[in-house]
Length: 314
Image 1 (cartoon, one colour):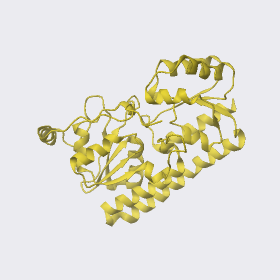
Image 2 (spheres, helix red, strand yellow):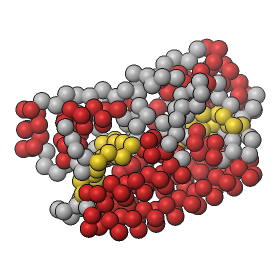
Image 3 (cartoon, rainbow, N blue to C red):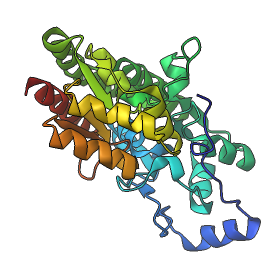
């Protein structure tokens, strides 16, 4: 499916006056104060300013940059639906100062590119989808949720290290070491997926959105959800009565082993699917698109993979 307008995040224009007000009044905190979830972490004055579209990439940047980076994550609230995020002038200000910008790409966070272009930024931009090398299958659409693909995240770590080294050549060796250390910690996650594949390969599961599909595919599982259901949910549209009934029948007929449920974009139809699964005794595995409070990327993904394995073992 084409990237919907639901995923093309709106941009609040930045005027010169607004920029001046922000420069005078917002200090070092880019949080909008209007429900957006920008987060900035303190570092040394000489640290490389980095902006990430979500706290997922912000956390990875912090792991690689250590105390040599100052990271601002534009979207970081687990209660915020990234699809409907409204970028604002404070985000623009943070991007104007960035030396390195990390975006997802693939239509997920287009507001970053629009802001960079309008602000004439010279930042080094790391695009996760481009780093992944993934493309839409023939006759299909790209699954842009590449942070659920661990080989992609490993390649992304190298690319972030290279971008940081360009901004701060003196610390290039440290960035490279940190990237390799981070990549080594991804290996146990891939081994956990391989164990699921060995124990449950070919078993069927359902999803509400394509968010966790890379993890599901790496675990050797089959997505049995009607494409019309997950497409409609991802695009913020309505699911037809027929498609909803087909989806619910997966649970009432016990045709799937688990439902992997995106908590961040729930609505009446996904809630109906979740309740039907629970009523039928089908395990529900909740996932999110951004880091929950108090977690880092590695801990978050470990919990996701472990929850999937536990659900399949029931």
